[in-house]
Image (cartoon, rainbow over all chains, first blue to last red; front, side, top):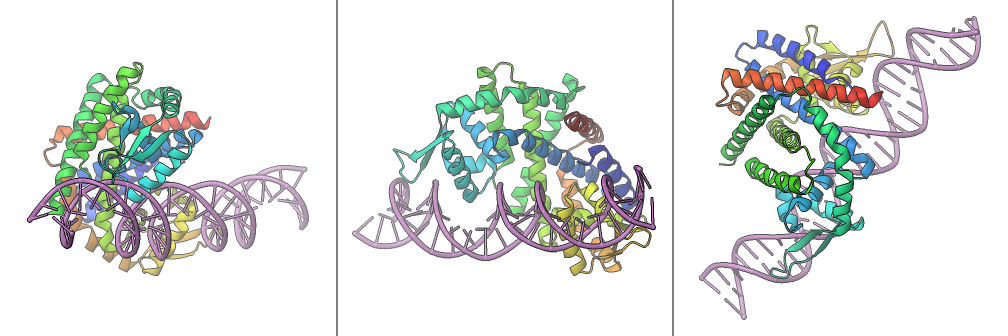
Length: 174
Length: 174
DNA sequence: AGAATTTAGTTCACCAGTGAAATATGAATT
DNA sequence: AATTCATATTTCACTGGTGAACTAAATTCT
């Protein structure tokens, strides 16, 4: 796998040269944009790699974590789609996969029988409790050398960025 | 498309509840991790959306931009793989697509005939110069409300995070 | 020089995810 | 009761990307 540092160096040079040719290019913002994309993608790859031994992919993992973190351990496909940013087509497949492994159960809701009720099983909970702790050291190592202030700042800036992105999406839609 | 703000609120609650059950969970780092993944993914979606009218996907765009930003406008598949973080298989397909549209040219290298020389064409340059400027407002809007300090901080923190990720990958490999 | 190894790219078969359309069913509105 | 709307699933065709096997050229090692 290529070094992120190298990719970043390449990008800095590249954007620098582009900026000379296209003076009104917002170089600083473009750089931040590319940084986010690169680092985000690399984190995703890392996570996917971590999950592989457990035979899970990112969206299955996320689905399971949402269910686990729910007070009642349950949700509906639609809601899971929303919070995992997955399409319903894919959520059906994710559900199939997790049901087959016995980590979740799927049944019709009592009140509204259009709805499907998805619930994490006892085995699912055990699975999460077993697979999660070994991931902690890696997550901590990612932020090695980050002061408490650094972490607060990063959190603040990412949330601010998220808000701007939501605003952009809202503008597009209208 | 679901609101990022909602997803983030969900995550904050979820990680909070998990933290009660699993006290040694590194909640702050996990939150930062998820924030990066969510915001990164959303930026990726936005970019993909922006590129769709031009019939390009992210990796084709990136490939083209790297070539454009090169002093001599040329590179090799292997090098492009490295900096786009793509596999060679996929780079072959990207090349096919861009050649078919006349945006790049592909030929055997004179010195080393295993190598393939990829070069952006005049049409490719015109294409970039035409499609790029309309993207600037969006990039600027992403960082609306970011002070100069905010931007510097974010850049610093992302680069730091990148360094840690490289370190982790290096450790894994050894 | 000749064999073995390494490097660069391509081809092929596959997987994960998407978007659209069809189906089914229940809920809400009138 | 009929219409409209909401929820979920399935199927199908498609995109983007990957791993494994393969080809060809160059480099290294006797």
